[in-house]
Length: 183
Image 1 (cartoon, rainbow, N blue to C red):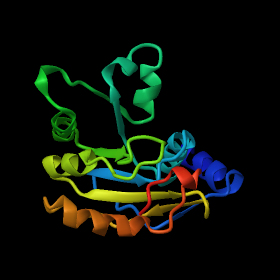
Image 2 (tube, rainbow, N blue to C red; image 1 turned 135 degrees about the vertical axis):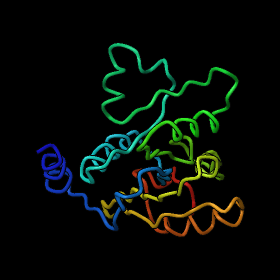
Image 3 (cartoon, rainbow, N blue to C red; image 1 turned 60 degrees about the horizontal axis):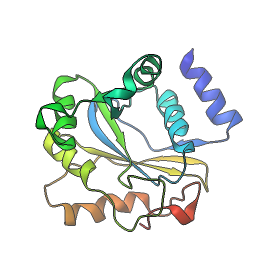
């Protein structure tokens, strides 16, 4: 029932479509989302998750997961990030992958909604450390299309792997294209 409501709103009222497929047998992965130019990307991601009918997660600092908003963040796939104990973010998030049976972490390597010339590398090293594939998803506002890419297993050679990943985002335009990362 809930998936039908998401589909009706997303496809009929908002006018978006989804191209490609997401293999639901992939229980753990880093979902690389580009471009990220607007706060609208958050609810678009929530709708995409609802339309696909898959658990797709994100992380936030643990302080966000307290009453009263903690319930909402958990409900929408949020996972509190505890960086105590001297762990850096990559190690902390890789630890979440180890303890969860299903964890598909959506992350924007741009790291901000502002224009960037270089992507942050955390998404890649999280996938490498957690030994999970990277699943590219483009939010193409120009075509009103969510483009599901092909899963990619990182080799450990970031400089050679990044161009292969970025090919899957060619032509995608964010809500504010001038703020988007140039692929």
